[in-house]
Image (cartoon, rainbow, N blue to C red):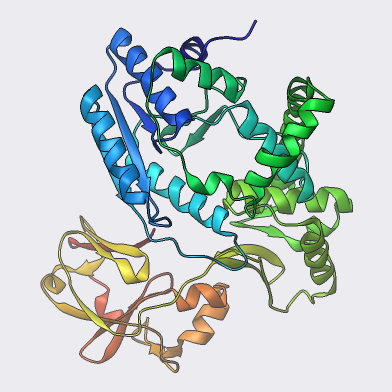
Length: 441
């Protein structure tokens, strides 16, 4: 027997390993999310758990401000705190407008919500997702559909209504006389999801009335298959891993299907990238087979802000990075100093022995990007060495060199994180000093 919306919510929340401390509802103002906010309000009162809502304003439609007003009035009437997040939608690569809006929406929700985030997707949404993934050539991971429970950092994301058809929510809204707003773009069949919703799925339901239940069982099978593939990928990763990357030689020693599985897992699970296509994975495998052990390789992933790189026989995922063009000053002082443009921070601590001389406290160092030709004198009795030779000797990949801030004093390079510092910064071994460390984010 199908559960009511309230009982489905109650069951989902009761399955959590730890009881909710705070509930957040993603509120668009449409029927689904208004029903969820209504049910969550009653659950929160019954269990004495704080409840809040978040509305994301994309600014893509003329009526968007009206939706904000509706959500504000509804939450005011129900005495529920509301946060409105306004975001600028910017496309990446070949992303559709639907995909861009969804990406920005989730980013805004994750920045706002705490502990438990409730999303109102239902069984019909799940079916639309399944067919769209199928036509994209997705494998088990994509065909398992949206997850009913998912961890996003410390946030617990729940979709309690994936087993309920939209008709159940419409009945719930009518029973409780709930107001909601209609998104006019939902009727625009130029958008893929609307095309499925308005034209294809109704015809499918006429011919196969039980298709939702049948495909739900198929999704359970895909979930098991995806879990098995993820476990296999983790086992292979342990065998193939080399530092922060994967040994190319060990990777290519695996059967082809396990190579693709591991590469997909490495990109999607460990680096949170969109699933690559089978064709792209094959092209990457061919490139890895052709590359010389001592050669560099860079392969871009469409739509991603990064690329796969190979250095000294090890494969890495490297996020895009543009170092600051302008130099800046840093005063040597205790504590942490963030350098946002460099994606990290400098930590200064007291140490009982060694480190930088305490006399450097209060001195101003100049931080500058690499220009080329820099030299560092790490030992008083040895000649200066170029950074290129030092980096090569230390096995530092080229992209990491560009991300390394260089610290200068009175026009001389005195510290290169990861390589060392000028001999004048070496304090006495038996005297208190400063421990200075660069911490990338």
